[in-house]
Amino acid sequence: MKFAIFGNTYQASKSVYAAHLFELLAHRGAEISVCRSFHRFLTSDMNLHLPEVELFDGRDFTADMVISIGGDGTFLKAASRVGDKGIPILGINTGRLGFLADISPDEMDITFDEIYHHIYNVETRSVLQLQCDNPHLQREPFALNEIAILKHDSSSMITIHTAINGAPLTTYQADGLVIATPTGSTAYSLSVGGPIIVPHSNSVVITPVAPHSLNVRPIVICDDWEITLSVESRSHNFLVAVDGRSESCREHTQLHIRKAPYSIRVVKRPGHIFFDTLRQKMMWGADIR
View (cartoon, rainbow, N blue to C red):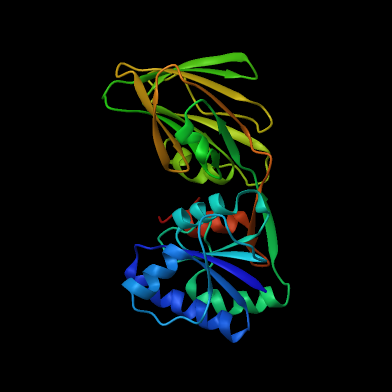
């Protein structure tokens, strides 16, 4: 098998896991290609001795499977590079929570045994696409987790005129608005009061950030509907964050958000159950009394 590897270039203490990963793959005779910036971090900054590998930049790679070693942020970066290639992504968690990257380092040996025996599942996750006239945002307009519209350069709220399939929904007076996929429902959206949505529900959740009105609550819509946003701000600008990649926009810039024409494929170990992850990672439903 051929693997393309992305990794976290900030956590020096986690580099030992990367070294073990390369040893596992080399032992199995795998063909390995590595993101150049990650390879530079491991060899130059961490002085690791790695086997001979192929290096790549950006999206210029092919593989049977992509490996992301880091946290969920690293997984999101890997997903943005995979894009519409259709290559399944395995997430090895050396971060904190690890909701997307949910394979622990001590599970690597058994996980690759399962992969080489074709004993694993692949889940399909929907992606959001942003369309607007901002060229910086259009370079990477796809989000696996969420697209967030946020206030910028001012403590004042922003006004977000929102329509669904061309029909007015409401005008939000808030610090921002989070449009999340089911995958992203357990991320930023959840932290501002949005619901947890199971991964295959074919839906999108719209969650306001600190809304001025108590009558405004999160709303779940079909993922094949189009969301149109127009923003007013006292500072005449606002932020748009696409899976954390943020850019400043001028007010009245019209944003169109819809389901992307491709999905991201996520590798899961056999027997993986979403609700187990909720309980284990988030202590969901736990009663410590």
